[in-house]
Image 1 (cartoon, one colour):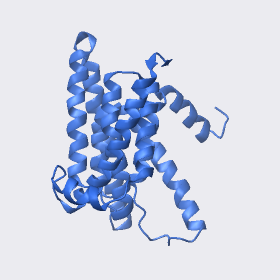
Image 2 (cartoon, helix red, strand yellow; image 1 turned 90 degrees about the vertical axis):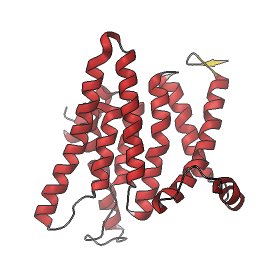
Image 3 (cartoon, helix red, strand yellow; image 1 turned 180 degrees about the vertical axis):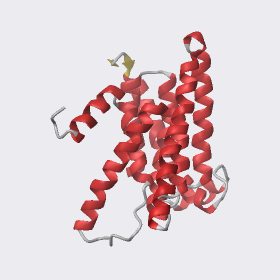
Image 4 (cartoon, one colour; image 1 turned 60 degrees about the vertical axis):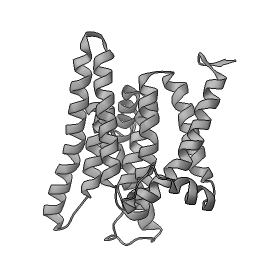
Amino acid sequence: MYINDIHILTYVVAGIIGLLVGQFIDWCNIRMPEYKKIFSKDFFKEYLKNTKPKYLLMVIIAVLYISLLYFKGITIDTLKFMLLIPMLLSAFIIDLKLQIIPNRLTLTIFETGLVFTFIETLVAPNFGISIFVDSILGMLVGGGIFLLITLIGGAIAGKEAMGFGDVKLMGALGLFFGWINMILISVMSFLFAAVVSIVILIARRKKFSEYIPFGPFIVVASLIPIFIETTDLIYVLLKIFSLGTY
């Protein structure tokens, strides 16, 4: 049986891999903030013996992997985003809990993006120089937008408006998405942050001066262009900001 020209067993394998990766990512989320080794015997000696399965995280990654296979097929993009998605969810969880995005995680995202940039450049017709340029511009645009906001916000407010972890994360993600998508991700992340902040303030769960980590909004915004085409995203955002008049 085939679904979208891919055998159903391939989806099953992708789902199983997602379940395993989900549990491993929970281990990474514990070790990275403590600057401890990820690949360690402690994973088998201590973690697996004393920790219950993280079913929610496992299911989320499994569903995302299956969806990725359905929308992208068996391609380089699929492999690239299968590596990126767990790292994005790791950034989401760590920043939400500890309000930091470990440099070790950001560097891994950057290195992975750089490797795939070169691979896609080499395998593309006519050497794919446009892919390389788009990725580098994505890194500069993504990091540049947030760096500018951080510097201007800090100068106006007299304190750090946004963490440099967010700046580095956006720069690393630019290698995966290119400059146009990085603009869209920036817009969507601020849109999501505004909506959630208003809801939290109305619910009186945080004071206006309290810090709300921005990394989770970047992560959610970054997951969207993985599954939705750029042109469709531009259309939806134009509809939102024009209040449906576009």
